[in-house]
Image (cartoon, rainbow, N blue to C red; front, side):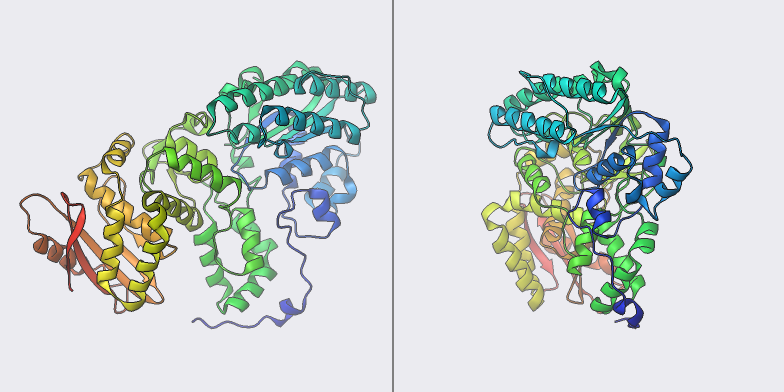
Length: 543
């Protein structure tokens, strides 16, 4: 354990409370909670003027950006003391606030069918109108009410207005597993959003957020003046927390958390970076997920926080009807056009779906414009767990316990038993076909699947595991670190006519020939041989 120094100055200082789960800028400021200043980027948008679309995954701070924009456009100078926007307002004494229509599509009820959805939409529009003290004409659809709201607000103030729409696609995504319902919802939303284009002359500023652009919704074909800023470098950090922002804004929390975990601040930052950092929306700037970051500082434990609620439900449904492996899209090359238009949620290729949901993120490309990868351990572990649960179903918890007991007792036979149960559950033909459609392999497809599936299972069990696994090479050494004991496992596949004992010995020898053991103190090493016909580990060494 590294030496650390107790920071009594920090411990005695009263910290600003964390804004965990709070999406309203005004509330964060009025309650004197910690706010990471994003107002320079937001005021740049206002200065540019126009109509914008901004895509980010769920729980990434989009709603906070929207409510901050609302306060800026309303000229709420009192809320921006000490922030960049305070200077911005002072430099613009003639700045004219404008009326703002702010719709949050998170508030729309989707669980009880189309009629309830329409009723919820009507209620939300009427609530917004009441808050703005605007009368609405009767309307037969959400679109008609929205049109009335825009026109009447403009007429009331005799000036152009701003429209902010947060999570525009949320009601549609809730129907991801119901194509008929999704189509009905799509029509309702298209009728609503087309009013933005129809009333263009009344609008000073438009900002719309979502997780992606859905062409079938009709928004981006009809709103052809809606500028997508999702990939722009100057707005790459509009949502999310950069490392510099972490160090500048959370320094006291870093010291206190490091003290409680009995590690140095530098060691803590390294651990947090591995667990929560890594999201990127231009391939360069890396970001922490803000929700996970805040939850971590509250719990002071490296847990998976982002993956719950709606995100986990949507992904669990998707996995039940789609086949892919955890390693399939690592380093997957994509063009810029893919990032801008990854496809409809109900028909996108798997890499498009995972990217839109935030499970895959961008890295700078070598072959093409970008490559895809998992942002961090939190996301990788969560997806690994879901994939393993699908394969093992009701046997998942039991096999997880078998693996943990085996690792506790340093019993190689128990580890082999858990792996064999996993291997027996894999529908190889389905997975082989899915993988071959996505990547090119230099090794036999089943060998690659064995490695990838075992890696996902161990990851999904919540273990600290590393694998030198590459999607275009199909070879890996598996390294598990459990309670300070390092396990190094190498596998070989036994094909017809080959001796399993010889292959297991080859795998074991490779660990030392390639110095896999050198970085570790007293690792427990073994090699195993998987019979390709039986699809089971039939030999391992040493026993």
